[in-house]
Image (cartoon, rainbow, N blue to C red; front, side, top):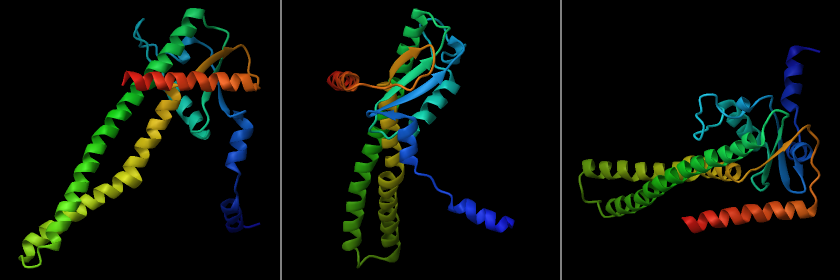
Length: 218
């Protein structure tokens, strides 16, 4: 078989991603992400000081990449497989994961507020220069061209926010919110978790309570 035909075959290759994700990650509406570690430093950065712990960047990348596979509608359980941690280290890990993604969520919220202000400003700019263009038929070409520039600049900025930047911010917000609400469990070996209906209801209730409490604080 020629190389050219092989390339065409590779281009036709496809996979049912949703079914694959459900098979590997999802059980009863919960996404379980396994994470095997050999030491405390696999999760907590060695540069951290006691009481000011930060996450290892490789661990953060792994967690984000793994979470990307599962639909945003599924809450996440992080199953850390280890035989090396003390009770205190486990509590530090839970708290550091929550604090890290709480902070990341806060940063995304600030970006969203700034972009919302720009969005509103550009709407008014678009309306104002649209009106000016409508009533500027008798003006010279130079002012009208300037109005056109501001009009299309405002329109381009709005389109970018709606379809590009705004989409990315909403995606980042969902991801940070999911990871800030992640439930961390520890186990000695990996076994695919079978959640009962009671387990699912309990997890959903815990997440709902956490979200409502954060809304009240705001």
